[in-house]
Length: 203
Image (cartoon, rainbow, N blue to C red):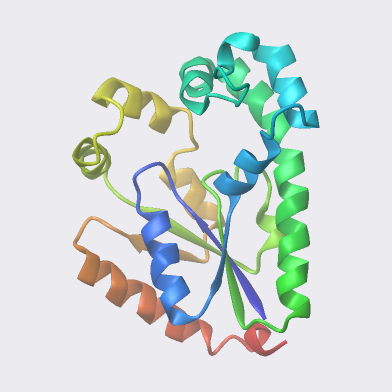
């Protein structure tokens, strides 16, 4: 079995890469969804987040309002570090547990999608790091099409993450995604087929 860590900045297309990998037969673990699970009302992480950032981050039904929390942390490096310190260890443990569950089930490949795979030092969980890269202009264009945040907010999110050039030092594969979906599918399939020559996939 091989575990692929799929990472990249917001809007790079890492989720689309994972969708393609799922069709090719990989099981997908989404680190962002794991983080959301840690936000369960009145759980350990929930209590720590409310203590750190105040009750203003809660909705009327006491759920964590991720948009409000994001507005606080993505323009404040210290606050972002504090958030990551609370959430990442718990999400890491959940990811490790799910990988082991899939391993026991005898799956051929797992893709762990994590924007902060490198920054959070989750690379120990994976056998290969696949970095998805897109130009800043392309990222802004995509997110505007999806009616996401305005350009200044997108740029703030991008600046809060490690530059792609730095991430490339840790990557086994770099997938450039400035083209269309067909081009991305072709590239991912090519790298997937190359992966099947890796002896770890049959471990």
